[in-house]
Image 1 (cartoon, helix red, strand yellow):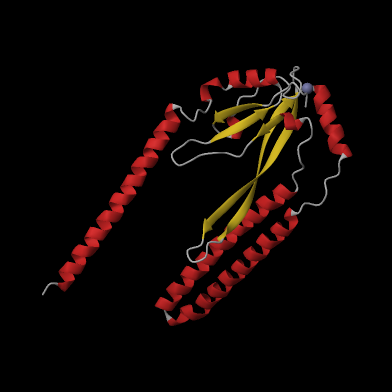
Image 2 (cartoon, rainbow, N blue to C red; image 1 turned 45 degrees about the vertical axis):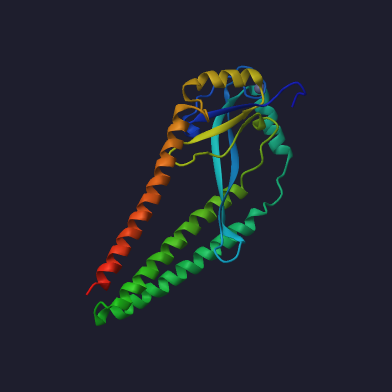
Amino acid sequence: MNETEQVTLVRVRGRLRDIALPSRCPACGAAAGVPLRVERVFVREHRRQGVITHTTRGVTTYHVASISVPFCTACAARHMAERAATESPPSPLRTTVAMYGVVALVALAAALVFAAFIWNEIAGGWRPTLTFAAAIASGCAVFAGWFVVQAVNAWRASTTPPPTSITAAFDFGDRQMRRFEPEWREYRLRNAGYARAFTQANAARLWDDEGPLALRAARFRRIAGSLRIAAAAALIVVFVLLVLQAGAP
Ligand SMILES: [Zn+2]
């Protein structure tokens, strides 16, 4: 990166594939014509604090987002050369893929055991035990399916090579959205001229933290919060009334 060049941050609302791309090279600003696949791996932490202990628990999921961006012929050639010259080391994510795969297999096996149990016992007529077994079997199946998806995503992430000095010129972050907000992303653009063209092309959908959409979402979040408190209060009142009624002679 040139010393005088500064990365421009542009926030745009909408999905990655709906973004408008200028027909200029993001790396040098020249006329572009060769589409290159720009891929980024995102790590999402799904954690919450334990009730008894304060250690956080949860899972980490991996996601690959990719977009085809036109670059100029010279930059595309440099990108190819860099890719050919570097051999990426085996990804540490392989362990995660294996781990998620094992969890999925164990859950699937449990689902099958309960399904087999139901199959064997169903001749004697339907009993509450079977309803219970069916609930556990479907729970295990859903759990297994979720981990299969995460294993596939982690595997895709493990095979995604890091950006080259060329594709790094067009960088973007993971999708952002707080409750009631539309999806938006932050784009980090290295070439100032390209950044100007990009901002212009997406002018109608620039995301502003202080904009009307963000403010409306914040208002909805406040209303939802008050509604939850009101609902909890109503539940307590109903409960107290029921207890009083039950206690009455
Ligand atoms: Zn270029």
